[in-house]
Amino acid sequence: MTTADASHQNDRRPSLALDGKAFDMISSTSSAVDADAPTRFLYREADGVLWGDYTGDTVTVGRFVGRREDDELHISFVHRGVDGSTAQGSAVSRITRDDAGRLVLTERYATPDGEQHVSVCREVG
Image (tube, one colour):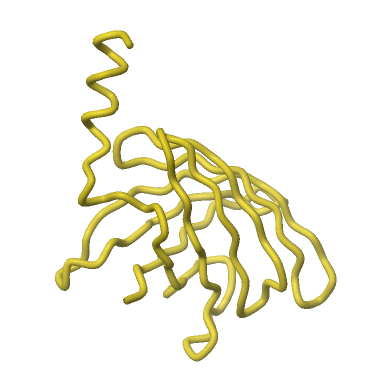
């Protein structure tokens, strides 16, 4: 392992670890969020690699995979909507904490028409 690799590993602070955590979408600029049945994201993480799935609200099934660089996530995703449509793309999320200490993911992505959007997901539990 190089010094840069060791330094990068040390930057993935355990307090911000995502493995096994669930997040509910609380806002999105691309669609209304159903507060009673929001999209829920389940994260897995190991050695800087992320993967997981999501469902709820307008999504019947969704999958994502990506990588982590410190407190920034780079993911690719694909999902099927309740209307039968499919969507795919990529996103970059920043990990922070809210006032209650829960993890928050602020995600920036583009819709297929190229319009830029932001969604916010908060740790469940």
